[in-house]
Image 1 (cartoon, rainbow, N blue to C red):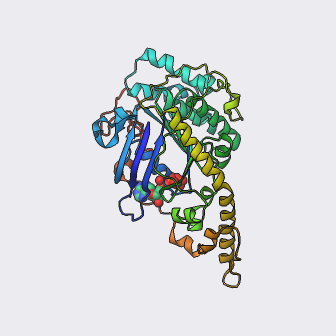
Image 2: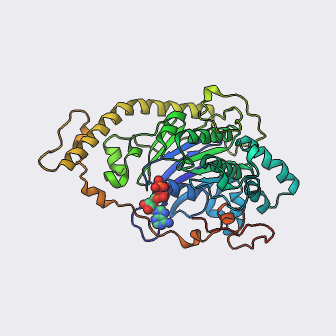
Image 3: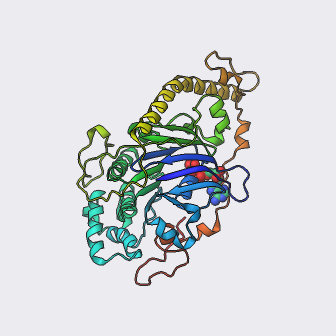
Length: 407
Ligand SMILES: Nc1ncnc2c1ncn2[C@@H]1O[C@H](COP(=O)(O)OP(=O)(O)OP(=O)(O)O)[C@@H](O)[C@H]1O
């Protein structure tokens, strides 16, 4: 469904790659959390999947297509298979809920009849059937995000990419959003979600892929948020090499075959739920959701072997990770206290002992660098970013489509 082979991305004017030889395979029906400190490469990963950007090395396949082989002209058609949700909702302020969702379908030329049927269906699924006539500013943040999700999935994409969809929401509203995303995933849509929300990741127990300075340092079934993801890179000087050498994470090899079963979850109530649905609480979904055919199949045997391998490695790594993290924190505290208070030796982890303490000066070595964004991408309209219209293509004056730039 999504396959990265040795994929690297180095932005113009930067030396360090944002993504550094990534190998990863995500199969149909999976729900994958992408975690990692700020600047670790999560959004870059999502942008590459969306073909919003080009890798500087390696190959990406999405839905069986080699992204290098898709011409710019065909990108909007490719993107119709993908839904995207952002932290900041990106709704059209002058359009009501119904029209915000219908917008996607209008742009790709769906009939009025189809729209009249599909939009209420999807609004029902996200629990907003009663609010179809509201304007975005008349909705709560969680409701606005559900409109954005409805818009992203109304065309029944095979893949939903979500970049910190709960980033602006309180915990209980976030839980409601996750219920919606689980429901969408249960309908067969593969969900890849970049997040800093440790509570959600820990609670949902889904596959977790962790990035440190552009490298995958952890790929774990039913994983938790993890420890390295809690440490802001700018604050720690942590790199993938340090994380690996200190045993904070276990090394990962090339992409492993992996299959996640598609689960069924209950229908959404008309108000946001404050409870994240767990697999063992699942009931059949009522909404009409298209399950796209699997472009590739992993065998049960391969899947089991991969899961077994991960489970064993996770158990072995767990104790080591805890000890190593404690050592890193001790080292940082000691370094912050200055030379009069050297780091206390610890018998817990040899690797952690061998590693140099991380002084606060290292923070300056990796400042947050909001490097200039690619002007070509920045100038895209919302319709173009959603992949609904080819970049530069004429907007339909009958519809309010010529919006954006949106960032
Ligand atoms: N268009 C760009 N031009 C130059 N550098 C960029 C660009 N986009 C991202 N970067 C850099 O690439 C690295 C990875 O950024 P990315 O946005 O992928 O990280 P992230 O994990 O999504 O961070 P956050 O959690 O803060 O959103 C960072 O060092 C960032 O400054």
